[in-house]
Image (tube, chains in turn blue, cyan):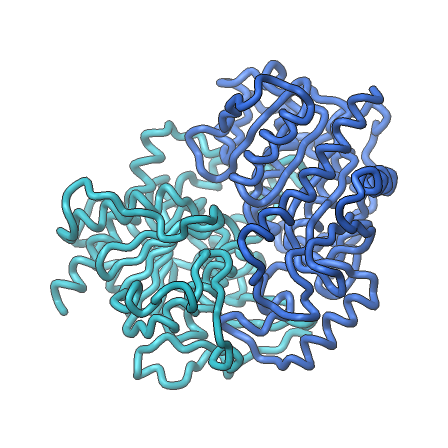
Length: 310
Length: 310
């Protein structure tokens, strides 16, 4: 049934540090319309617009990714204070994209299909722009398991709802399975950055990536639920015992696609609640707003440190 | 492995026409925070805000759902011409929600997980607001199979990437399968509305719902692709032979969840290209804009007719 595509997990020519598409058809296309970005190779000079990109940061919410580019631009001393960063994807509201120097910030919506569409077009954009040495980081929110809310989790590997480090997809009606490991060196570098900052707890752990927020994560507060609190606790405790520290909805395909195309990738998510204690996200708005800044501060520091070392 | 939940496909008390949650825990909650809408039972008077809703229309893009409420409001002679319809979900950019009289218009982003989060919270909202006799319609875009671009497809049933009328989900690590039939009478009523308008072609057919836009729909133009044009053609032609007329990314969970909670539901999508002819969406902007208005015009006419008959 499921076939492991080992070839896809070993990109050729990794040493060149270019973004490697895994699709021979693209080279033969006269024009490539990146439909959900409202960009195209025939109407936009992608190498001029994006050729200097070294850090791609992605997250669910457009306004959060706009806040991130503002923050990182100010942290890196790029541009003038208060300078506006216009949305590059004008004319579409599918995704929002912002750029400051070598940093690209892109929203991806919620769930595997939404981030997958964005990643297909982002990887092609980076390829067409002839970018090299790009690092990809997802910054997001998640539910923690047995962690104080506000803790940040750096993902070792993404696992599915059965705790397997796999991303399964249906291609031409057949199941294809890809690996979901993330870059170990990058994860440790980010962990060190959190130690430098030392203003919130950060742990390294596995992240469970589900296709649903309610039943798919064992919540008792959706429109549908056919199990008990005890069933839920048993499932979440089994996840914790298997190494899972938090749950979100995009990491597996992000890990699998970045890996296939030779991009070192990391996932840095803050936990907005402890799922062993409840299901509803009920912290006050200002507490949640501060929590959501933590991955941004961590990744901002990482980029600053990397650029200083270059 | 997969277990059919037949009980879930026969909502109790359908005759009362109330929105039936399939979760006994909700009745015991003191407060219900609809997190991704930024609404809550303790801070908002949901029956006063939403108690008169009879038609819920959902679609991927926030701006398109705003355009729809403006259009339908003008068509139904509700409010003043040019009147603003503020976004009810202020303080979040996950979803956008607009209301005009008995019509609620809500965006759901792209893909099954994104629309599923919205539907869990929407079904709870309608339940808390004690709405009755609600009809749910998804209006969207899709890729057609063997249809002239601009044709509209009214979905008979949603099928998965193996052409089965099933929505499969993982709950507490176990596969659960739900049915994806849509309301046959509603589909025929909508087909009649298209005949009334007689300004574009509309067909009744099965809709394939996939979890990916590129490899998951047999496209050759993604960042990853390991098959040939011939493989793609074989797959799409098999889909057509199985009754599939268009492909999108939300219909299966929309059908399954509305059915479970006793809401008559329909899916009305325009096709923006014929997938037998290509993969890229390359029609000019103004052509696509007119295509996207077709489901809106059809559903606007349907609502007007229903209200006139009431």
